Image (cartoon, rainbow, N blue to C red):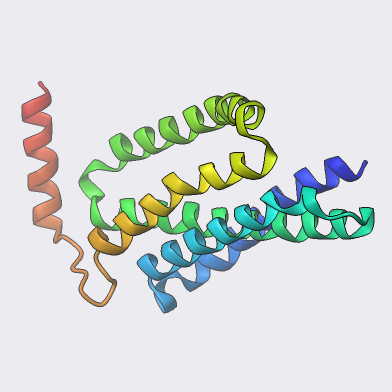
Length: 173
């Protein structure tokens, strides 16, 4: 039963943080929420990698619940802010970008457990989660460097959006 609870707390906290973020993106900024979600995810994944080292079963369950809850919260922040960034900065390409984002998430959900299982078999539980943090840290660095801050952001005008959509339509046909 507790294994199911530990797995489910991720989804519960992801939904909760998504609801929180949806009302706070304009206050704190899309980039800030995205980066905080990434940092929270890395730290909680690293914490989860260490739960198997806890000798006390109660400490193991508690640490697992807390780290998975924080992982879910971080992922909810990344998901919500990432989607908001795509729709805010690329309004003329929403369908294409969201479908690519969904493809990336889908492939991650399909391939992640298989690749993670192989890594776990090769190097063990602790290192498998530490290795998973590496691409996430790279993404955080990329976002920090290349995502515009909300103070610097300028939403494209309606004319720019229409021009981009028209140009894309003409190029695609």
